[in-house]
Length: 407
Image (cartoon, rainbow, N blue to C red; front, side, top):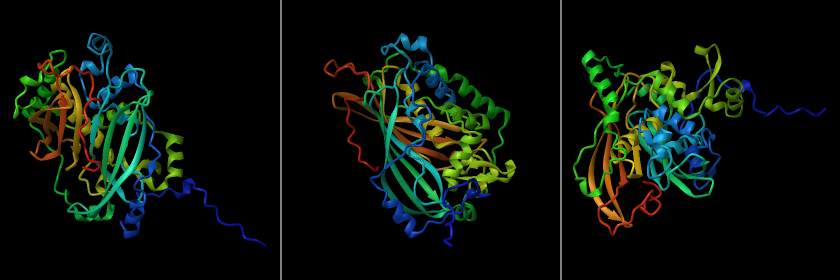
């Protein structure tokens, strides 16, 4: 009698009781490199349609108060005739650039991205995306020893197949056991603020709308190299902030939706004993301290795309409605744990004209209350010029920054 082969169909029994403890092997790295050039099935889509509601909800999730991105009446009175999407809104399509491929069971962290922006997203637009693998590198770190850097390129299009934005996404892959045992951040504890500290942070946050440039045109000629931008504050980071970002991104997975995903990709989920065996994503360390510590993080921590968006808000507040954010790059160098405050700072480092457009380069940095730079980066902004020979513009489609693929 013939023996019936064991079923290879995934089932809920394949979901383990703890996050997988994958190992970075030569074969796993080679298999990841073999994927270079392949197009990935995008995660999501989550928020694909731009509407006044989705645009405002995204702003709520990142704490952006600029009326150009959230107030229909204000938008109607601007040169655009409508409210616009915050420049990072395409990220809500699915956080493209995060780790979802290769190196099974090896934990991944969002390490930053580099956005080049071409066109505004407006209500009525529908975003699609093409994501492809463009690079894999190996490095050594104090956090986990051997690590792998993975690079993907995401191109975002509107319903007219016009390129809206192109982003280089970077993620780092770490063995959970190695990161846990290295204990690089084990001495860090949740910060304790004085009443004066909290009052100062609260005042910065409540006063931020006063520094939104808005309809007051910022001309290129009036900007000076070395000029500092008004600092913005985000924090102390709380569960309201991290959960609010998920809501702003439309990422609400529950019950059968989660279980179906876990059955399909059991390595990305586990049955958490703290939840009575309920299924949770391996990234739940953003909300559960025990899971964060299992991968060497001292506590629950923010979402990288969330922090990238804060840095973008720093620039858009300053440039005004008439400016256009052409590029923004952020690198996640340190964790931002619950209780930390992020002070987003910037200064102008260069002024120049390219493709008949007046541009400024800006050095940006996020600094925590310990004085540590958690997120270095840079931005490029197009500003109106008083030089009548330079044409007017409404977006950045006319400028080619000639960026290399991996940078």
